[in-house]
Length: 355
Image (cartoon, rainbow, N blue to C red; front, top):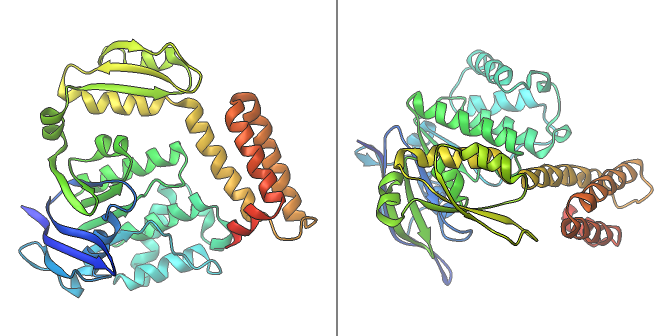
């Protein structure tokens, strides 16, 4: 039985049609991927499901009836734009949001303590949100989203800003929530994440639903289970990760930017395992780069308009260390980071970050 059904939904803003006659059905107890490029209409559809905005035409059914304002309490929504009050303490704010979802203070505190221990963040309870990094704040907001144990969970680009370790932690929790009976809508532009954790998908492009169905069925209809993996890092480690699960057809000779391996997965049931193994073992430098970008952004947040302020000096030194590291690992990226730092010293990047 389907938990949520979208029927012929259309939404237009001024001269832009954000959704054009979109229909889909989300099975109960599944992880359902909304896949598509930025600007395709995924977030607009999510906002309509959450009753943040209304469709111009069409309707949304929750179960066997049209969705109502009361159904919002049965939904947990983690938006792409994170929203926490920076001056409030973590525990105080988490309890506040839990009360908005109908939990008593006592029940909220009990559940929050359990989640904080699970995520290893029990020491954050009395910290202010402004003391947390972006990734730390996202952990708190994820907990707040799932705390009231809603039937339907909606995650809009949930892994943005997370390092690979915490992204994998979140994936495991999303699958665990599904196994405990929740239905999950997972919006992303990242195909590898969709194939790894989603049971069904809808592909939205230029405001229209162009493909829907079970992930395995779509793969059988549209692909030959041949994948090309572009990566940086240790080729031997990648080969070991997929050994016995697939056939390695060929590798690239030109490794000036990315090396590639072409893989053939003989059995459909092995595809997800191969994708998971590649995500874990390949692209090692790429993972390190993402982690350093998070560190860079955290350092940038320390900077003020006064170059001689102690926080600005510490911010500059942290970024110089990152530039030096990447100059050794990858000359192209090292140069890009150096130019970015110079732009910020000119005041350009600093002003953009503060706006």
